[in-house]
Length: 137
Image (cartoon, rainbow, N blue to C red; front, side):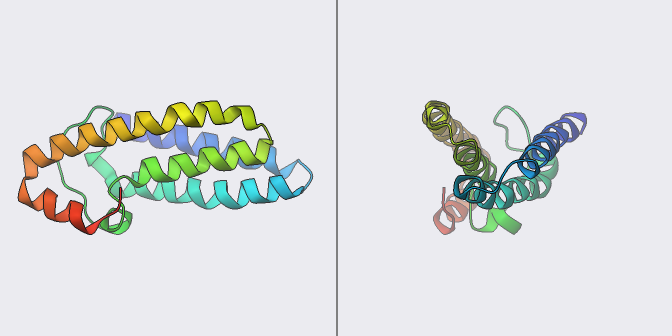
């Protein structure tokens, strides 16, 4: 439970810092687009994290198969919305060189999602395979 609260607090702190910094900048087109992507992404990231609850872990483990809420449509909403948040930050800061980080992030998330899928499939079998067919990434 302690790790769950720490990760949620880290996400919340980053969100607050981002919005505080964004509020003091001029509203250029790149800032508007960046905030328009990052704001809903971070809110959905926090929602996904809350919906995952105690099933969250840093290492892949299969304690519970979460299939409700955002997880009813997307198997890995934390990765999806975390990536969108990062894209929003790149656009907002108008620093295309940050795409290097994004290019590194995506393969890492694909790798992690595959590892998690293996663990979940081993534990939940057909139930997970059926869930996987109904959801995206």
